[in-house]
Amino acid sequence: MSDDVDPRDTPHHPRRRNILLGHVEGENRLLQAYRSGRLHHAWLIAGPRGIGKATLAYRFARFLLHASAADPNRDAVSLDIAPDHPTARRIAAGSHADLFVVERRFDHRTGRLKTETGVDIARMASGFFSRSAAEGGWRVCIVDTADDLNMEAANALLKSLEEPPSHSIFLLLANRPGTLLRTIRSRCIQLQLQPLSEQHVIEALSGVLGSEAPSPADMAFAARLSGGSPGRALELLGSGGTRIFSEFRSLVSDLPRLNRRQALIFADQMQGRAGGEDFDIFCELLAGWIAERARTEALASMKSATAWAAAHAELNHSIRRTNALNLDRRQLVMQAFEALRDAAERSQNEPAAN
Image (cartoon, rainbow, N blue to C red; front, side, top):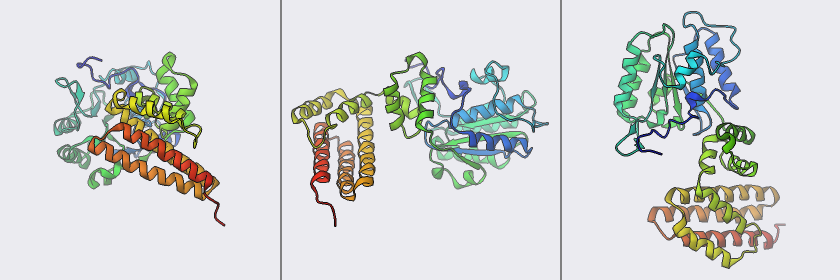
């Protein structure tokens, strides 16, 4: 991808997504508030990263910018707007005059997104609301995400939230709402979205990837590890760390039996084959897999759960230490093999409690 292209500008950007999966309750709450004629001016749409918060925000924005501000459609039963409608097309193109998006800027010098949202764009939101609606209806500001606002930007946005003009609405997205300014949270109605089911994650992946979708088994694997986040599942599918973890998992599929020679070959390869991000994803998947194994074992036997919980704690400590001190990855991987083998042996051989 060219360094001059914003990585967010893809055919699957939420402003271009017309289908929302799994958040019927959240959508209905927004629709009911609109139909009441007393739509609150600020909503905090919260939930884990990548579960569809932005898709819901743009979906509601399309609905509002298509609707009449003065005469709410109290009979509306859905937020659906046809993708070929002029309002939907302008939003998809990022050119609707009555929609303003506060987000991190793309730095053309570095080819990366800036690490935070600065005060300049937050102040532009104030200017946006100081003008009359270009099309005489609603004005919508999406903040994606409020987590990214630096302190100066958060305070600038707060001023707009305190004195909202009529027929205007803020849709703030937050992965970690508890970290936001209390004064911002207090001016918003919070709409908490939950992680999606594995099936909805798979449906979302199929819709985004189309003919480029991997095998059903790979998509099911990514969905299971994604924590209910299609965005996270997409990252996993494109990650070398996921492929590496799949190889690791096959090597420990017959614990406590372990082919030490193959384990050593795998560990030696880890030092040069995994980039920083791939290695981080591998470690994340490894920790999650062990935690899930401990939960599964707990249903069968407390002694098994104790052994696997100890392995989980040991490896979490080792992962943090390896990353913090830039230690040898091979040592961490071999420690993981040994810890899992020992946990499997203890869970098999330790006598059951009377």
